[in-house]
Length: 305
Image (cartoon, rainbow, N blue to C red; front, side, top):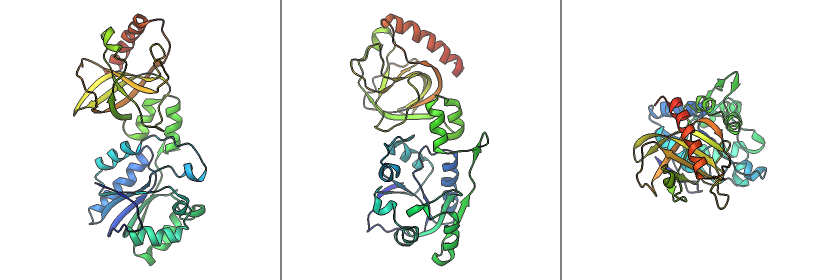
């Protein structure tokens, strides 16, 4: 897979395209990207066209809060076998380009679109005029095929990034797994912590999520960790570690069961499987250890180990 930054000189040909932020890459997004792979089998190149920042950060001056960082999202694109990811700059010149101009100049002109895959609620261009009806009407004149897919539902509600974010804010990790088709993850480089876990026989790995990464409520979670090609079970604290933290730094700290290797600098993927308890302050490290022992027992019961 190649990641291409959009420029006026970029040229591709014979492509099947899906356009969107794809935050979370939930089951609805996956259905669209899987359809791209079907088009790839017909001889087209599969392309996800996305943005370097959420459009709302520019159009509505919103802070960026994402289910997946750019790094995490690219990992999923690659796993799904895409040929290209084209990253558009989230600037008004592009975001507010009239839909006919974006279709003609960018999608069909520069990116050589022969097929577009979109959900039934997809819209693009100034005032969101480029909807599924527009795509179908323009297809014959531009020589592309428009594949419009219905919205997937869960619990009688359409699957969306907004729905996932609502569940995440409530710590409902198992329900999130059903919307994503996988557990909620945090990917990052293992960094140095305060190493106090080792003093009580519970060494941990520490990740500092990228800015804007959405996390569930501060607390303790049953976890699964992928590290150096291996899978491990563990217990994760999301939050500020109030008992020992000298300054408030949001982190994801995981004690991996039966694991004591030095892995600083390695990339780890932490899956948050189930909420165990809220984060709290303890009187001392001995009290922390006693509580974590109880948490580990609960987590191992959940993981059936």
